[in-house]
Image 1: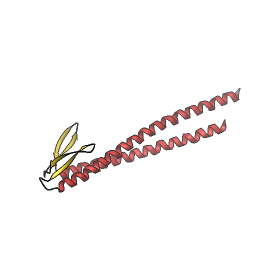
Image 2: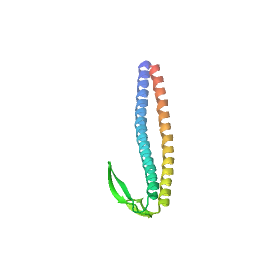
Image 3: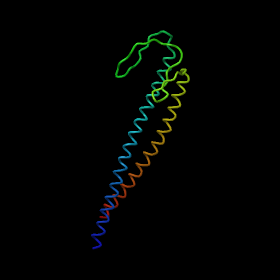
Length: 143
């Protein structure tokens, strides 16, 4: 009777560990998606920074090609002075190119901090998954 009971306990323990492993796996996938989105945002900010530096060097009145998206560009002429910066909630504010570059640098630093925290979380979840995998192997070997 105890062999059956012991076997049932092992089965139940294995099921619980498997469920926890699958839960952690979904959590890891979500964290990896967030990391990918953060990296895309970081790349976007870096491209914007380079573009702003280039635009600031163009002589007033010179023609510019302004990217609209999907390989579509609009023609425009260079103006010296302030640029429009998204302040959030669809509100635009005028800033000098130097101020805009400062804002972008601040955003990059914030993203780096968030990315670092996210990476630590990913490593933690992956470590827990590894531990549970080892525990499941032990339970299977004891069967």
